[in-house]
Length: 560
Image (cartoon, rainbow, N blue to C red; front, side, top):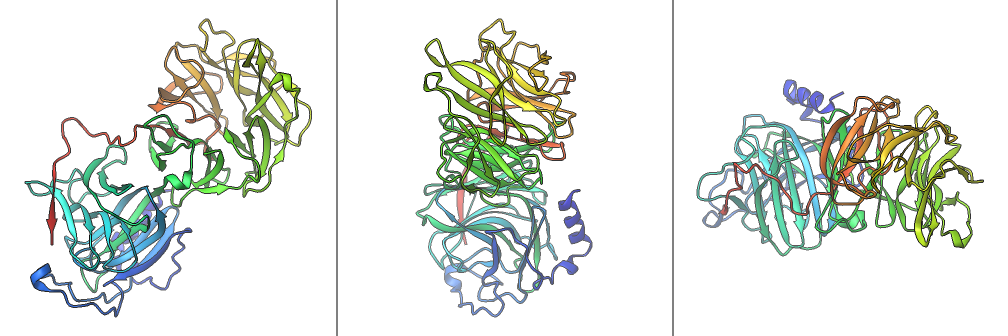
């Protein structure tokens, strides 16, 4: 169901019905909070504004007459506010949370209900040093008539500056009066940039500047009407805040950032959930559909599947060095994961893990790498790596072990490396990748076998290197990652393709191509309804692709 469409229809058909909901609970997901700021506060005493310094403005020196509101449902934020983000004192309604240091903040403005079609009503992303109306701030916003704007206030209670094209009038890359519109606000040290996009994929620079700003600040969504007595309603979805400190991830390939994405099985509706300049890998989708579980910086993290809140670290007691081999129990209550060569189980909420794997003779240099859990949660499937011919990674075979702990059972026993064992949803097959029939070293293909290791069938037979087949919960599709010919193992920083096929290997087709590899889709990441899956892309840091036919315009400053 398209909740955004329903909300927008309600706003357009009955705007008055939603404009007096100040006493309704906001239902904002933590840590989000909301309030009127500055001149939007009803009864707020607003100082007089010197005309000789700021010029005439009908709102200067006044305060709002109606309290703003905020609501959240199914990943959609609906924010209503009066007044304006402008001049020496801002006014409007602000949905905010604390932020520290660098960040990437993205949201789609699905629409605005703007009674009177006021040109300077605004919906935007805003960073503030404080919650005071005259706080220093940086904003990327969209107006319903006047287009996109990048604004900042360098000195408290002083002028607001707009950065705009020079010397021509504003020529926003998002046409005026166009919704939905994507906005992005980025901080890197004291460098700030605002971007706009029609689709959330191709971004145009609206403006940028360097500003000496405190590390501790407030980030959020704002809505203002440019009037004292009318609420403008702004609807935001696809809201996601990415902070390097939050993910604390392992370092990605040099000059790469990690973008946690979801996409439909047919390649439609690609969504950015979370972005970080440090490493993030291997999403699992929780069975209740609410969470994505990833690893980064030797830890496990859970992120809301709609990206509406920051990542939360999942405590794993004294077990550290978690890698990108982790799976969720079918009931979602337990996370099974690999760390420092062993297998562990921990409650979804976190805690002290229980070790599942066994001690092996030191001479084997044996390491466990988890990939699958049986539908009845009785058995785990894993890759057993051990030394051979002086190589600590000389043998890679597939095994199972009881989820409660117990003896290891070997499934494969060949010199050809095997990896990625994963149960089908009915438990009748284990899917994996192998070099079993490879004529070129490293040329892995996708296979399946019975859970006892018999009945091996090869599913892919092409020139590319194919890894990690993942079966959908309803058993109808498999998604796998395909590397360029000549690739050895599954390295990072490659031009990869995510492909789909039926469980028997038929109907193979490309879904999406991008820079990725290690960490992209190492483990099963299907949504519980089998309609979407999650993955990680690794584009270059600072990469904001734009059509060559339309270079980004130069920017100048407008001060009022």
